[in-house]
Image (cartoon, rainbow, N blue to C red; front, side, top):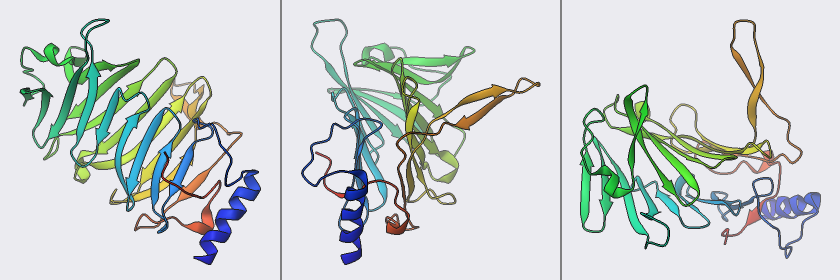
Length: 264
């Protein structure tokens, strides 16, 4: 415990922070909080708020409350307006073992095949998402964000990738259907700032949180064969938190501030 407190105050001193300073949170200066047992508690950049428990991803929501997601229930909840000035409907999208279930109030619609999407899906504010004519998933608008749900049906259970976009920003959660539909990684990237954050899980099992790190990946050139070369962009403010196989913070490998708080 003494080591924990010492590192906490050293981090504040190096960063020039204060226990009582009121910071404006952003993608380049997020609030990253841990609990007394060294588990990541939450990430908050005043745009997206992610919560964690015991080394596991728990949920996320946008600060404007237009969309949220529960990992335990595999449920997306968003507000949908048919037209400007109309009351917003609360829509839920649930991932089930072999289907996608849409819910609005007491009504529901189950999708058991991407090749045969039921009629009436638009009543839930959702449309089929197509690539070269084939349905790959579903899309919709939640506030100012365009949302794509890419659905994979290849494994024993259905899996999906959740993508939120604005004209400058992307928020993505990637699942691995081969490994029991666990979270592989989460990333947020802002193309105007050329800045982002990546949250990854343990490589072999994907069972626990492995790393939270500021990073931005961009195309840095094209080879003679037309292949695009991707590379990381050096960031002015860099932070990194690494975790052991239990999902607990490795306090000796911290780059950035260590805070005990609840991200409110």
